[in-house]
Length: 96
Image (cartoon, rainbow, N blue to C red; front, side, top):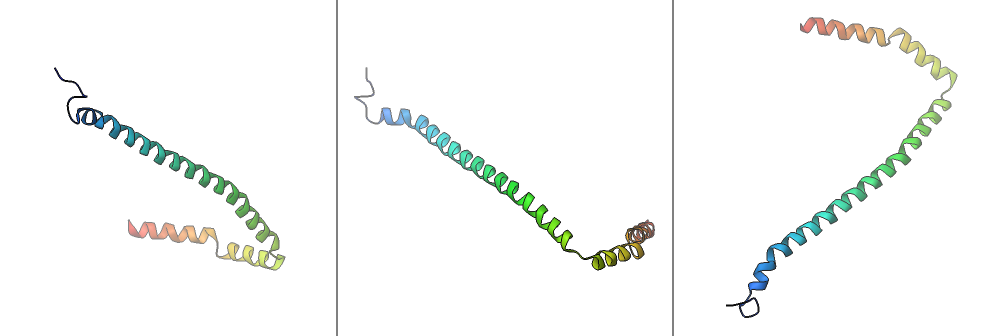
């Protein structure tokens, strides 16, 4: 009758799968924690950037003068969305 004390390396060989699994679980948990930390940081940055970009766009709209707003309205009215849609429709019919 033998036991782990009298035989060489039986204890080490017997515990190797458990140690390997423990190391694997520890590495996975660390990777997941870093992943979640990065996700929270990205959400935080997006929450800061969205109002900032909205604010910059609003400031640009307020800095437009009446002349440039009138010119844009005239251009849209004369060569605007309806003519572009008509061109797209004509191209679609030509392809079919």
